[in-house]
Amino acid sequence: MSINERVKYYRGLKGYSQKEFSEMLDIKKTTYSYVEKEGNISCELAKKMAEILEIDIRLLLYGEDEIGERNEVENILSEIDKSKFFVVLNNCKEAKLLELFQGCSENKKNVILECVNSICNSDSIK
Image 1 (tube, rainbow, N blue to C red):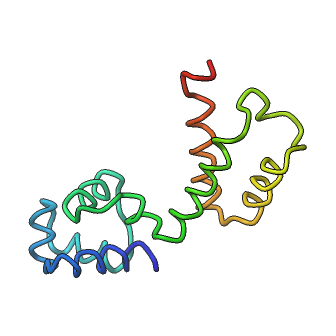
Image 2: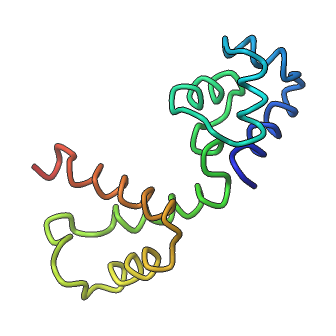
């Protein structure tokens, strides 16, 4: 399911019309219609939508499948020794991470890189 389909789906679950939802978002109905048609959405608008729809923003942006993959990657990353993260991949979990990464779409690779950057920039490893 694409982002525009997810937006429409979760809006429908709440019972909001396009007009009602666009008013809640404080945008023109025509602008909102374009979001549902094309899936073009800013981070700020996505955050506001998720808050109004009472769902996790990751669910809105990535869908359930990608959240599951992201959680799997986060679990693998949490088990990797951060001080050895950039050492040659010789651990089974590290190899699994590389395997997952190589088979991912560009969008999924970006999610993985966000996780890695978050870990590498955390206070616990500085």
